[in-house]
Length: 427
Image (cartoon, rainbow, N blue to C red; front, side):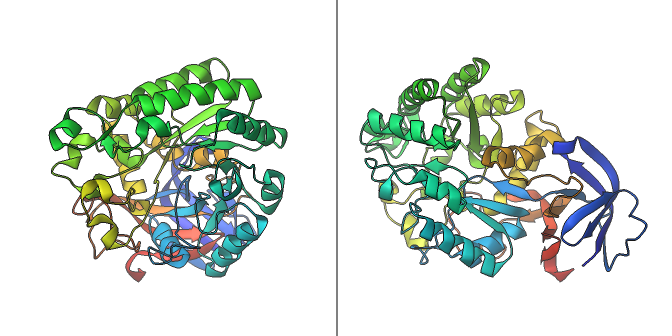
């Protein structure tokens, strides 16, 4: 279908575009900005007056729970939640069941997501077989099957030699290694940031050193092997500063941060709020401000949701025994827009952190409204206030500390490959 989107503010950070104009789609691709081609006739017109027209969001970390954890959520439920939030591309970490360590599992996820047909799902393959940390996976075969990189998730490597060999193998094939910087010995037994609040609550803490020690180790191995690496969900200002220095020195490293780390701190744990049991943990107010400053300076390349939906029972036991993670797809965009108001970040720069920047990290031709590119588009009413509640959340997981928050900025239309896959209230 030929579609014209009219009168909206087009923001495309990848091409340095920020203006009120029209956008035209034919055969699933963007064919023009501004005046339509002479031979173009729109079969559908969307009036985006007063709204933003932005690239579909690219999420670097979304656990979709299928295969293996369908009692928490399914591909269908989470993809629906994603498109309702303007997210058109999702990267699935390898810790499914079975683990994404063979081409067969990659194909299974691809076929199931294509059958749903609403958003694009790409896989990050397992760096070691079954994420056991000892035997390397067949990374070349995973790359051929479509994996955009490899990771061992939160699972530790057996020793540093295995991690070094993994990086050498990945570097040979030009694969990006996705690293969760956490020293499992220092973090063992902890359930929140180590500090005054963990002491007051009597909860075992995870020290900042659990992250900084792991970052120092990983940076040394990256320098030794030359692998392209991405640090996932760093939470401490000091760890980000260390990676920023490595970037300055020329190491091929990037960083993302979870959106909630830019708004919540260990104080939000309050009186044992299990919705704030996260990994990595919510850090101090100083860390949150440090992350925001690193985002402004460009040290942190991207913002992700770190979406981890759970069934209700997963959060209904004592704090330290609850499962970590939050349902976060639907708060990614409004929190990012809020950063543009609160963190001295331009609207275009904020949108870049969830569109073209994560697409570049994944090596995908996404996150842009360039001519000839696939029409993955989100239309957003930036002035609409709405409340995240159990009635409005589309994800099957309702585990989020943002329930009850009034958010600003809501997606009204989402297009994937030129198809309208979501429309708010059927407008």
